[in-house]
Length: 351
Image 1 (cartoon, rainbow, N blue to C red):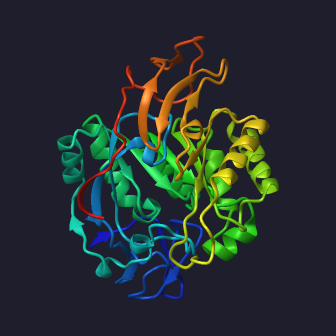
Image 2 (spheres, rainbow, N blue to C red; image 1 turned 90 degrees about the vertical axis):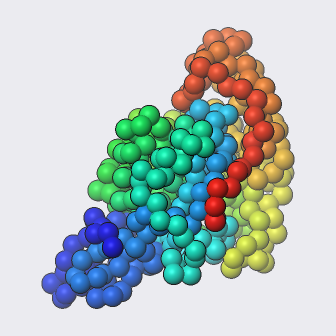
């Protein structure tokens, strides 16, 4: 068992987890909402440390990240459990599972980085379930990755305490934060969490050197109102700036939300149009076939710079990090060359 950080002893004998805004108070033997942080002998232990439910080599665009070394592969892995209760969770077989219910493999940080290097991945992504709940493991893997020249990616819902947030992102190069809605009611009813801490995380990230992109899963009848979309994008423009990429992605019925239809592509296109009208420079659509909505264009002259089809790159007109047409610098992190890719995932075990 691995002793966890982010907890305090309470006067009544319980311990309080301070990792996320839930502040779970646990008696001996109890685990938190996330299933993987438990009171054992009056101390908090991380049951998820070193336990992966599987690995895959993904295109970085699948995280989704469109401005972080596009065209590269990233070693992706997760554990089990989650600190949110989303009724629509599309990874529910992992996020809603206890480790005892999922086959898992034991990998110390060095093993994870060895696997990434052997697979030819220049970065490691903490993903599938929310890595906030296994922060200690993610931090230790990130340290090992950086020591050996790899980048790190944190895919999260951003529901994390201030102290843990600072610790985690001190070791991350990029993140995609899932902003699930722009109403407190949606967060409380549909995700069993709160919106305000997520907005705090996003505002804070915008002031750091961590490359940040945002995803909004658009669910028919719940968070697809054009007024909400406009409010969300206006908030992003004011608090994060025009160059933070925003991804509107399509919902499909899953888990406890089987009564909603899939998101029509036209709804995503409308959301994208609103965001661009508001003033965001880089707005994408996902989980649908929409080459125009997945292409990165120059914010100055409009030249298509990285043309995509799903997660595959078809062409690139970048000169380093600049538009090959007008020379405008493109916000993001880029290598010397972006080459066409197949955009496919390769499974390395379980998941």
